[in-house]
Each structure stands twice: as C-alpha cells, then as structure tokens.
Image 1: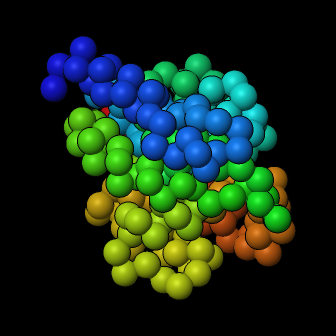
Image 2 (image 1 turned 45 degrees about the vertical axis):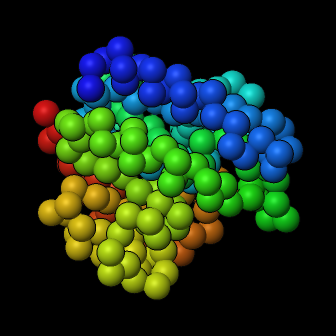
Length: 194
C-alpha cells in the first residue's frame, strides 16, 4: 500500500459513521498511524476531552501514559513513531462509574485494515481489558494477573498494561509491583525500539 492509499484509508476511518445513532456526543473517530510507526498503542476509547480536541490521549490518562513510557509529547504525537488505534474510535458516552465501554463495531470494521498496513511495529501496548481480551490468547482471568504475567506475550511483542486513568489510582496503590517490575521493563522495551 502506498502512503497515499494509507492516507485514504485513514480518511475513511475518520469519516466513519457506523455508530452515530448510539453516540450521545456525535462521531469523531480519533486515530494516529503511519506505516513507519514502530510502537502501537491499543487502548479503550477516547474520553470526552479527547473527543472535544481530536487529539488522542490528550487528558490526564495520557499524561500518565507518557510518563510511564518516558516520552515527551513531540515523540508521542509523531505518527511515524507511535500509532494509536483504540478499540473504539469515538467517545462512547458517560456511564454510571466512568465512560461507557468502547463500541463493539469499531475494531471489527477497522483494526485489521489499519494494523495490516503497519509493518514496522516492534511493540504493541494493550491498555485495559478490552484490548487484552481481543489480542491476548490464554489470558488470565483478571487484569492484575494479565499485567503481572506480561512476559508471557513478549515473543509476540505484546505488552498488557492497566489503563493509566486517574480512576485507577487505587489499583496502582494496591499493586506496587507494577511500578517496580512492569514499568522498568516497559521503559526498557521502549528504549530498545530501533
């Protein structure tokens, strides 16, 4: 696929209206990708602030994620370095205890088409339970067990992570091993991307 045809694909993704009737704030697919990208981030779905700005991870969750990755905004938002393809491309709306889950239509419609055009990916971060459920085989039952056993998927260049949301502060406090074991390994893997 040429770069021009890849840009056409991204344009189609950004024009997607598949879930429009079910989105309380309307459609605004948020994606960042380029065939040269070496790091792929598959998260859940944009939050309200991301929906409003159209910039992926442009919120406190993104600040924490960039801190985990030891990346500044210039590097993180360079699509030739980092591809960002969430499970749901549009803000799904507010639920009782946070945002609603990502819409189920997005990943089947777009993931294979976009991800197949990213030949240089050296590491894929699977952030949260929805990405992990789709892309990890033999996944343990809980998010904590999945993240703790991250090495199980190292040969596949996959790394499961919890969501960096401020709402997960309790999880992070209850699981100090994440800071001591997982983050150093994550940062080493990021550093080793060539």
